[in-house]
Image (tube, rainbow, N blue to C red; front, side):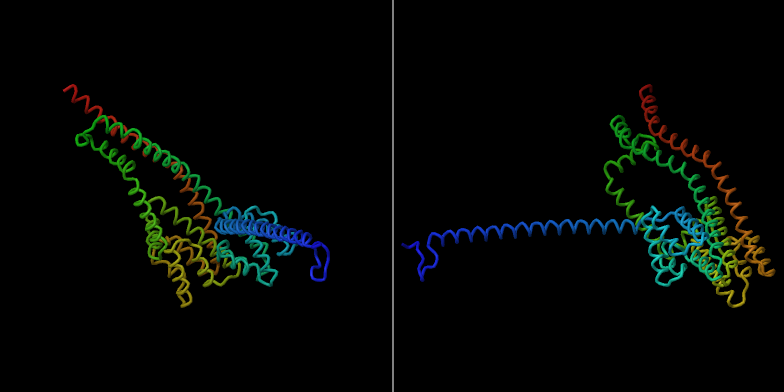
Length: 410
């Protein structure tokens, strides 16, 4: 009778037990569903965090990736061609943004386009990306915008980048062969030091009686095999100190002076600097940039602290009435007499921009001759270097053998 309904017991005990059991199952199901939901949310959060880390690393890699000179050349070349067809600058940049393969350059183009759409000029938007576009390029573009000759200015920029790219390719082609030879020689030396020299030590034993070349090679082997932490630490410390010194203002100046004093590389470096400085300065003046401002902009493109400092002093003295030729004539090592005479003629005849372009052409031709001469001299120099290294190795290995033979025969 306990299973029947009553006012005090509206649900029979058996049904009440079933309800309790079902209720417990429902609670367990809810808890299991909540647990599954938490696991899914946690898993999604982990995936999201991994994606965030991936995007962060990807963005960092893109930001650190360089934009090659050839890519800048292609950018200005295509931009000039599209603008010449009558297309607006934002639309032209949108087209370039789509077809550009370099992710860093793609971002830069997008940033420039958005800045222009917000009312910024092309030169102003390029200045916001100073790590890609130097001040000289921005000033030349600004002069083209103000004069309404942007297409002509872009053509000249393409010509300038073509010249720079050509010089870089020639220098790289000259240096590639000796670098490869040097790397191969270092690898061969490491192989000899690690595998051959220990056998010599086992064979001869007494190091005091060995010839000097062999002892040098044995010392190098001992350093590489047994004292490699000291070797790596010393090299790391030296490179770190050198980079810190080179980045300092005093170190930059000293390093630039050292490069200019080199017998062959110094003359080539001087020719590259003078060619770039004279051409950019001449084109800035021809584009309508004031002479004083043009010298300051040109100084920032020299890529040499010694020349940069001298050109900045010349711009300050020019504002005081001292001519450019007179200011630069006190240092013939940096500015040859021929260059000073040509500048003086250009200042007197009010044709400084034409004179600068002619000087730039002269130094580029001179630089081509020096690069060609260096490429011809490089082969005998490398052969002499290889021969010297081979002779040293032969002496270090065979001298103790000959010495042992003499002792046995004696």
